[in-house]
Length: 248
Ligand code: NAP
Image (cartoon, rainbow, N blue to C red; front, side):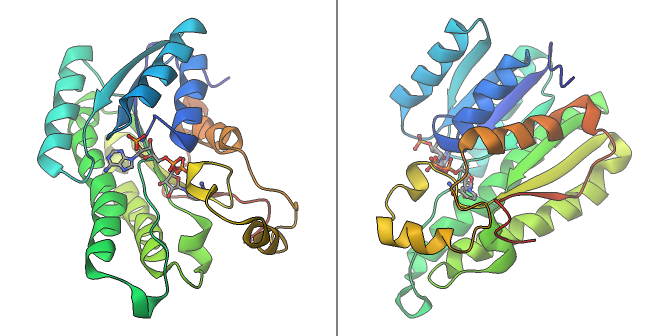
């Protein structure tokens, strides 16, 4: 099950966190994985090394997802180089938290540019190749915060709710071309993104999680592996919750 041999996958934000776990999970199933990052070349290289040491295939690819031209060029070149692009996992994302009255315009723009526009730019470039092949799989990283909101995360929740709309619109637009498009909505996952929270903040968040623990990047990657597999061929336009029951 979930055999990805001969598939080429691009994971944006594959250098760390959920992206990294997705790279390793897809490579373990046989995919050749292209690891995108923006600035952390050392981290991206160490993911590629880990994949190769485990007998898998991976390469690194730097570009800023928020730069539409750069994303388009990099993805077109990678599709040409490999002759295909079967899977896109759009994991690159940032969080800038703060109450509305303290929200800076530039932070609001930045979060929307990376989290929403960046994901759409990558999907647009990937879909060009997938349409020709009449098959493809795209998974966006939304969030439980996009579904239920959170005080102090207005910009982040706007960006993550937007991705659910993007998922549903693109799923409708490209179903007839054999491309499935889904989202995952993780809850509170242990990564660099959540490492800045204090123990008190973490404890407070966990009271809202029926499973009473944080999730792991591996657990999110497992859901992504399912969604990009052939076995998930009848699943499109969905937002799959991986949140310990935090939102049902
Ligand atoms: P993370 O550990 O902070 O890693 C972020 C990744 O995104 C890094 O690989 C980073 O690359 C890359 N990135 C950031 N800006 C980029 C840009 N402009 N262009 C290309 N790559 C860029 O994050 P994470 O926790 O794994 O989160 C991954 C995704 O899941 C995000 O979309 C996040 O919103 C979502 N999510 C996370 C949680 C959670 O609890 N952690 C929950 C729900 C949803 P560099 O290494 O080069 O900086």
